[in-house]
Length: 99
Image (cartoon, rainbow, N blue to C red; front, side, top):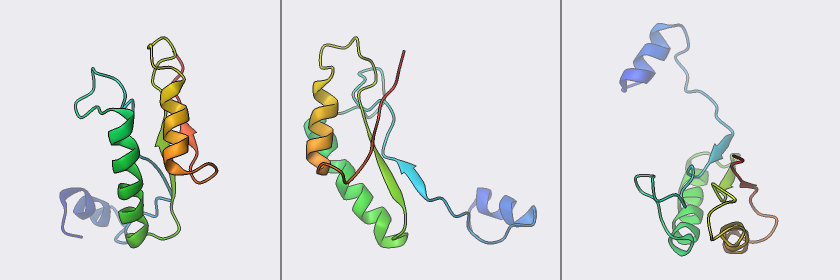
């Protein structure tokens, strides 16, 4: 397959690529403790672009937008509302973290 993980998968009897149908576009992207965290404006620009690129390779996938990581942060629930608006209502589910 050309990658260490792919070669190991093939050596274990599964030479074909895995079919992954559900992808989350980030994890706790609003959290300043995360490497690569972003503003909601940046996330709602980049995440749909990433989803579009992913669907060019795998048209049948479903993507989940990254929601608010902590309801105690001052931006709750504004992040979720802006993400859903940025993706278009009904086009992508939005994950949230519960603490």
